[in-house]
Amino acid sequence: MGRVEGKIALITGAAKGLGEADARVLAREGAHVVLTDVDEDNGGRVAAEIGERALFFRQDVRDEAGWIDLVAEVTERLGAIDVLVNNAGVAEVGSIEDITLDAYRFTMAVNVDGCLLGCKHVIPVMRQRGAGSIINMASLASIAGAWHLSAYCAAKGAVEALTRSVAAYFAHERLNLRCNSIHPGGMDTPMLREMPAKMRALQRRPKTEEERAAPREPYILGDPVDIANAVLYLASDESRFVNGQKLVVDNGVSTRQH
Image: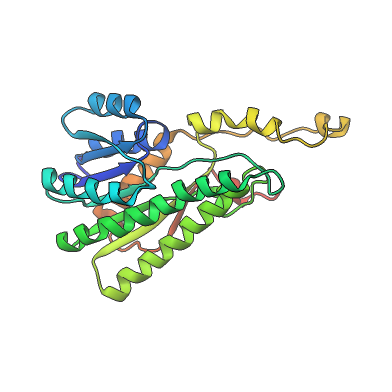
């Protein structure tokens, strides 16, 4: 207990799924958590359940003016931001032949623009504080291709590359700040549970009898708390010498040959 005692953590996309788990674990370990999301009902509910250590703000991470206002209000009320978890994300289903330009741009805006804007506007606050940890939620999709998630793969690859750039900037500026990415495999979240039905709509041909009969290795979904525990490590001072790294949390899926 108390691994992030006294730290102030801002978590985007915290109304459900991975962001909700992050907020609950960080609060349990002593942080004051600021949850943001476009889902006001669930975001407010989660903050209320966490209790006095939590605040909720409605936020669209694509909106730069909104980021400026949010950071100003959080620092005015709480005095600092020690941890930023850029977790907000969307996954528009579509192969490279099916994805629309609008869906691609929306995916990039939420996943990449939101991450970039979060880093840009929170870093000055962390500079003033003299320390801080930024955690960008990437994905196994930035490492292994997913045929049905062309835009999402592109977006999470950009998040991974942006993370390295931010970490290099910190080293160049000799700042006591860190930026790392987490790459979840399949986690039991609302976003993933909706995926199979959307994938079926993309199938261009029926499966052959051989494909239907072929044995499949069971795929075990992780629990969002598995990611929250990784966030906790990167948010804590235990990871003070970890910068510009990608932490893959996928139960070894990325090590297997298919």
